[in-house]
Length: 132
Image 1 (tube, rainbow, N blue to C red):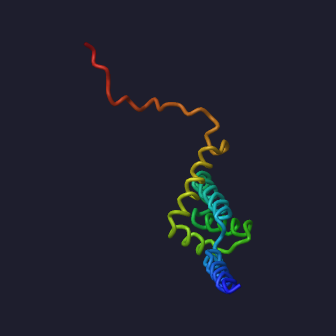
Image 2 (image 1 turned 90 degrees about the vertical axis):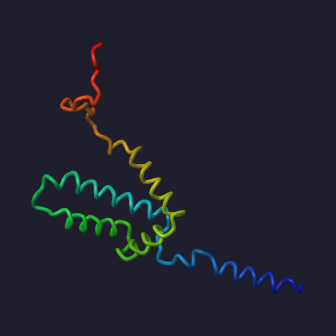
């Protein structure tokens, strides 16, 4: 019976000092992964298609797309910035996010070229076979 207050106070201390309280305003890892994936895809779109379109600047279009992504995920720019700063300051948490994004990009069939990639005919081999 006399151990009950000690155990109770330890439990209160343990649950009050959890990491979740320190991460208020930080996106969960899964949501951060999804937001970053959408941002990478937006960057790919801007890099691939806005080169041909002179009516838009890359910077303005990127900002517009980022704001749209924030709206879709129901977050603010400040929440994303705070989350990004938090995760990038913690390599043990940031590395799995970036690794999963890289793996997702490789495995994504719609990001691979749809046509066969041909060898460049203008590039000469570095080493030529010398006749004997």
